[in-house]
Image 1 (cartoon, helix red, strand yellow):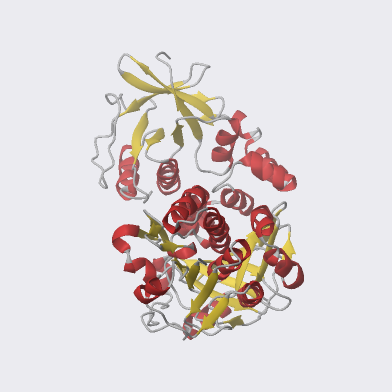
Image 2 (cartoon, rainbow, N blue to C red):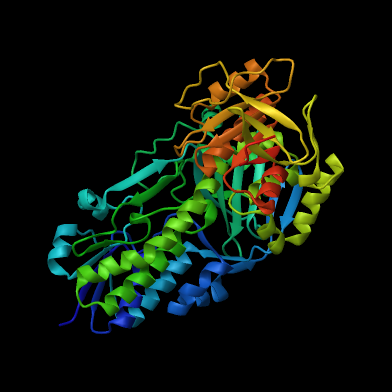
Length: 541
């Protein structure tokens, strides 16, 4: 008996799933139901890194063909800040208009025999009654997901940064990040070409800047369609010099907060989640369409290998979930960077800012393999400022000087110390000021204030890396330790607290890592995330 499959949602994931299922199960009857018209689309372009394309191309060449014939490709990434342009090579990427991609995917699905029904609103229960398998590829606001929310157990974490999606007739050379301080605060752009005459132009800012600029008046509760013209005009004027006075183009352009979505399960009976309905990752890592299309590959393989639909869906989730979770893990530091970029804009010169940005998810060694010229410039800028290589640069704390930037946390007679192998040591002390946000302050008894001492701060376990940070900064300012040692929490929250203390309180910070090889230590120091990198271990000084 032939398999009857329904895909609710005709985005890239749903269309690719329809194509691949028909390829692997030619006897299957596959129908795609899409509420919008065939040529409707929101947003402007989609981008893929070269490294992500192989798996999709191995399944079906439709994407590679589309990018070759209709897309754009580049190798360099550019960061623009304070009048300077920093180029980072080795970041091969390709982009295409979302509308063009959808039309080509529609053609491919039809060629395989899928039935595409546009302007068709469907009820999940009715579709389940008529089909053996239902694929919910209906996006981040999936109605199908909510239909079985008790089983899927979806969650969503909302980012604090505001973003809005435009296009522009200005042609970027490749993926370009533009940072601009205006009269109300700092705004940033993700820009990249998607065709011969249009670039994507995504703008982000913090909520305080957004409100000061008066951009909070547009009614985002109205149905999709109308765009925020006030914001378009404001940003067109703000970035006029950076886009040569070219206009911004709108398409359902309105401010929002990105939501990272997860689901405890991706299948409920004969209903499966696919793409954004199951998971999202911040657009700064460019993986939404990639993840949806890779989900489609695993779903089609599972359907081909298992006659029992529920067994197929269990196999699909087991195969697809690890890759998604890895991407979401790497996207979290990137999303966090975009939530805090305003303070980095003020703190760093363009070269260090660009390295700080590039190293938000990967280390110095990997960046060096991609863009050796960029890393040479980063290292040269450090040596010009300090006279040494990063890890060999002394840190002078007054009475104590550490000859390099890697140290250890040791214990002696019930007290902790920050020390190096050469004998320099600073005792870690408990801070008498209570902190909020659930953050504890630990350590030995406070030393006399006439000797250098270090404050021992514990980072939170929560995803919000700045919970309680204001109290931590206030305590540091009040007590004025020579050094602040930040430990515990998650790798992300630990780094965020260290940055908050370092940049807001103006004090040297030792970041305590469970493990820190030379590359990790150099990355943290070069980027300005820490002054020292410490590992725990040892019982003497």
